[in-house]
Structures are given as structure tokens and as C-alpha cells.
Figure 1 (cartoon, one colour):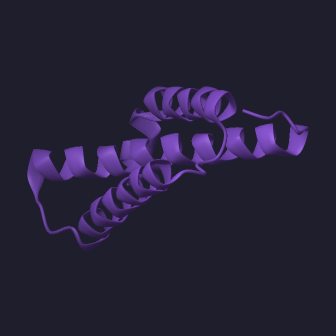
Figure 2 (cartoon, rainbow, N blue to C red):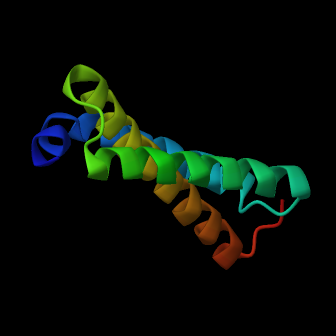
Length: 93
């Protein structure tokens, strides 16, 4: 996993930055559909992280799963940070 992080850090930084921008523009999810979509993304992150941690998929597909888990995690972390920054600033939607 360290090799994946060291080789994909530009993509991870871009995912975090994109998440910050999207989170700042949209804020935290409040409606039913937005909460369902957030739950679906978190479920996908949990599944990808579980597959990566258990190393159930060998070879290149396993690398794709680890990369996807890292990128989705960075994006969602950026979305949460951007949404929290927007709510702390008191900016309404």
C-alpha cells in the first residue's frame, strides 16, 4: 500500500482538491436523495477498503481496487472538509 500511495500521490492530491471544491460548493448533504447518495459512496468505500485490506484480488485488479479505495477515500475526505468549512463559515446554500 505504501508503494501505491507513493506512486499515486498526484492523483490523491487531485482527488482531495476536487473533493474540497465540490464540498465547498455544495455543502454537506441534507436532503433524502443526497443522504442516500452519500451512504452509497460510503458503502462503496467500505467494500473497496475491505477488499484491499483482505487482499482477496491478486495482481493488477487488486492494484486497481487499492487505487480506487485510496482515491475515493481522498475525494470523500475532501468533500467532508469542504462541506464543514462551508457550514462553519455560515454560508447558506
